View 1 (cartoon, rainbow, N blue to C red):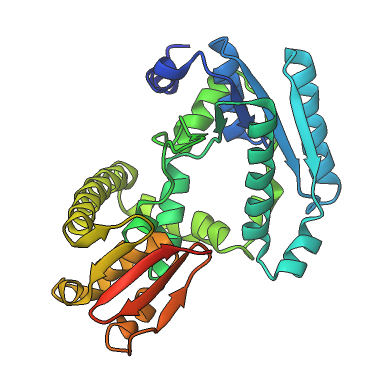
View 2 (cartoon, rainbow, N blue to C red; view 1 turned 120 degrees about the horizontal axis):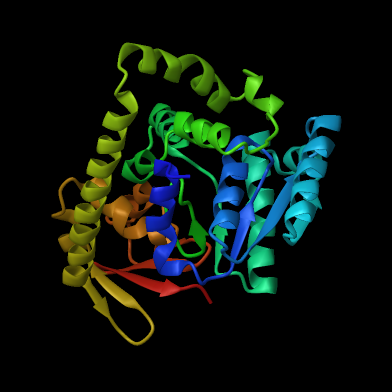
Length: 309
């Protein structure tokens, strides 16, 4: 059991190992390795399994497989069946986006109801590269290129630095049973197309492409930390806080270069499109913008930022 994945897991879990975890387990190799790592280390956890009912009998076989494993290992399990296609049609979403929305909404409900400290997913480095390439083709900014965070408010992803090939090797060495997700063999999803047709070419061209990509991610994360500090310092310089509002001088905003970048990063967190904010600079007093949470109103040479009533 002296596998590098086990060693890395020890390091990731050490500071929070006494927490209560909810593991997202599909029955595939990634999530079954994840569950086995938690079980082997005697960490307190339960399992959540989503049946999206997209692959007919195979979806039910996945559900039974995970249920049987939990029963054999005496692990508490939560199972939910979703009418995914209907949800996606009603909300005009793609299948993968809709399934993700349903999954995380349910996970958050479980987190709150049963007071779990973390939701744990089995995302790994190959997933990171797929997300990077998808977001790059969509014209994403820095946040999109960084991709999947290893840890956030309630999410924990201890395998995020691991290679898929190493996860498969760990499963083989430790006789971990799992089910193949047949949807991974379909080309109708962009992610699957990248996984099957694009990334293998990268790996054939350079054996070290994944290690180099990991370095790129580290560099991007360092850049994000630097940018976040610059944006925060800029806000501190130009935001004047009053009792119920924030006053922002338009002339000071106009001096920021590059303007689009700064306005996007300053106002995006309040739900505003940077193009609309820039338009209001030269409009008459009284002009305003509304987001779901905030309001921006022009008053002479200032913008007044307030919470919505």
